[in-house]
Structures are given as structure tokens and as C-alpha cells.
Amino acid sequence: MSGRIAGRTALITGGASGLGLATARLFLAEGAAVVITDINGDAGERAAAELGAGCRFMPHDVTDETAWQRVVADTVAATGALHLLVQSAGIGLSKNVTEITLEEWRRVHAVDLDGVFLGCKHAIPAMAASGGGAIVNISSIAGIIAGHNMAAYNSAKAGVRHLSKSVALYCARAGNGIRCNSVHPTFIDTPILDKYKQRFGTDEALAKLARQVPLGRVGRAEEVAGPILFLCSDEASYITGAELAIDGGISAM
Image (cartoon, helix red, strand yellow):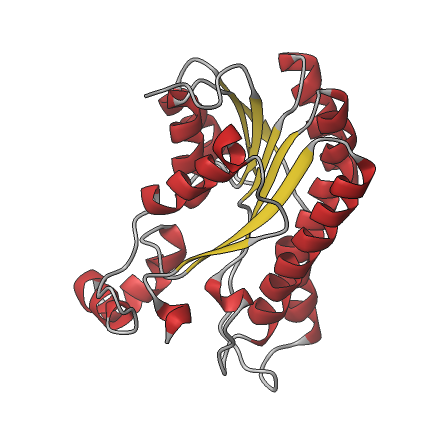
């Protein structure tokens, strides 16, 4: 590994599993100090123990503004700075617009969109004080391409896409040295697919999803973590306000 983000501190939400955990593992290998947060305290502690030296875990509900203020302050207190923010925490829901309840609608938006807003709002001042850095918000291909049974998820993830652009423009105008981009994965083999696997069986579930992807397979978490690392590195120093589809070609159809 080349130490592409050596000496920087990264805060990664949803870091106990899936894309957040894969990103944390790669960031540590590339020299960053990493703080992972997650609402699942037991899983977060296990992940931090697995990741080892250089990683800290903080319990965190991303829908709670006070919790965001605490996590940012504690990260700076523990590491001395905050340079990188990767917002991976999220939930899914497969229901169409007539099936979904208002409570479900609000819950999906609270986690998937409000949580990202709160992260940007409270991390940006700390990142600016640290000399700048990068924010990567994990949206979804569902934030670009809609589905008939993904009403709340489509809405929230599309909101993340456009919010990221607004944040990028604000930071550019403020001259605070912070870039902001969004990534849009398609089906990735992480715990978010567990219910689908339980319903159809692992092999059939992955095969059904793969048939929708031009590359013919479901993605790996590492194939999302790599592009996130790129967007947080100096190699992407002129990239802000962009969305990166990590979708095996779906958006090209």
C-alpha cells in the first residue's frame, strides 16, 4: 500500500459492516487514523477489534443531532483533527408509494438523508479547522434510477445526490478546502442483501440480481471502497460535486 491518505483522520458512519467496514479497512491500510461509528454497539466493538490499531469505535445514531456533535468533538479530541468523512450508514425499504406508511417514509429519510445532512453540517467546521479534506456520501444507483417499489429509498438517495452537490458548492465558495462527492453503488454483496438471500437462497438471490447488471455479477464491498479512497485522496483534488456510479454498467442502459 502507498499511504495515499497517511496522516489523516477519517470518520466513517455505518462502519460496523458492509461498505463502511470495507472502507475503514482500506483507509487503515492506506495510513489513516479511523473512527467508525454505528448504531449497533456490539457489532461496532467487534469491528474495531478486528481492524486493530489505528481504529476507534463510537456508538452513534446518525438521526440524533446531539450524537453528531458528540462524535465530531470526540473524534477531534481523540485524534487531533478531522479530514475525511464517509457517510455509509443507511437503511433500505422495498415498498411502493401506496404501500408505504408515513412513519416508514419518515424513518427512511431520517436515516438515509437527514443523517447525511447532519454529518455535513457538523463535520464541516471541524474539517475546515483541520485544513480541509473530503466528504464522500454513499448514495445508491437508486438515487439516479428509480424503481416502482422503492419510493422512500429512491427519494432519500436522490436527496443525498443533490445535497452533496450543494455542499460541494458551499465549500468551494467558502474556500475551506473541503470537497464533497457522492457514490452510487448497485447491488453489492453486503448484509443489506441478507433478507433477499434468506428469501431465495444465496445462490439464486445473487443470480437474480446479477441478471440485472451488464457486467453479469453482484459487486464486492472492496469495489466500492476503492473509489471512495480515490475520492478522498489527493488524486481527486479537482473533483467536487460529482456523482460516481459504481453499478456494473446499469446506468449506461
